[in-house]
Length: 387
Image (cartoon, rainbow, N blue to C red):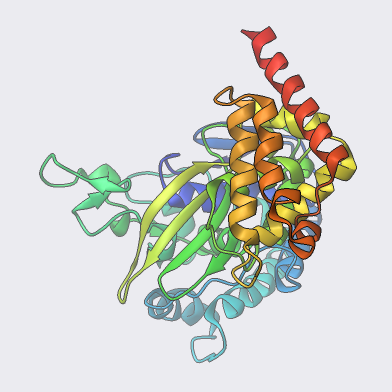
């Protein structure tokens, strides 16, 4: 068995590393047991791991996952440590691209010498209050702001203000050290997960640390993450209701652990990024039952409506309509309103509008409404029977 030790589950670094490691393992593929502080996988060899990392990196470059993150102030730290060790510090293209290109060369040389798996085992064998020191002993990299944005220097921790005086040394992430593997895989995890960025904010989609535990189907997790990221990419997180409904619809009929995804939001400053919110879970069991029972043609129409509703470029008030319909469906499934009330909410944005173009843009017909109501009733009964 091969063990990957992880930072505390409350940290952004945990999310980036867990995502990257699970995605890498899904390319081999091997079975893995996921815990709060570690991932334990079946054994694999140098050739398998090298191919998995190369395939993952190629998919990142082809745009199969998220957007390439910008490092800004972290770029100087990278140039003086990792890129300097590789003799690439004068490169002027996007720093993340240079890092991943250099990493692929580095792991190829390790695999050629039959040292890749051995070095990965060492790099992730332990983490302490000083960081990944075993990895740092290979190539030392200062903790990057992009990988630990929740820790404002000695003041702000875990997304809130620390009220107990000086910050305990065990959680001074800004003073920790990373290494070649923890840095590169961490950045690949960010690249896979970033789905929207503007001048002020960045939005990431990660597997949920609190819910993805035990033996999981990592290929299903990869497919779900890739599918949702591809759909959300370029669209801001303008509506929780719409994103929640869209995610469960896109992951219908897959194992529950692989569907438990969450959104993290970063605010961008001149010198550093900071965590705004990192745990908006896009999954509930009642909604999962609804999505699984919904007629596939109606499901596709709701996916299209939700996708268009999250686009800033949409006209005809589709964003508002998508939000209201999504909200009504979720509230009905949770028992706040009756299933029949969903029919009225959808009608408000179709035939009650007396606008044929808008009705066509919504795309839901009478049969679709009946399918939605029936699936809501099944979902509610499923929860009632469990209780």
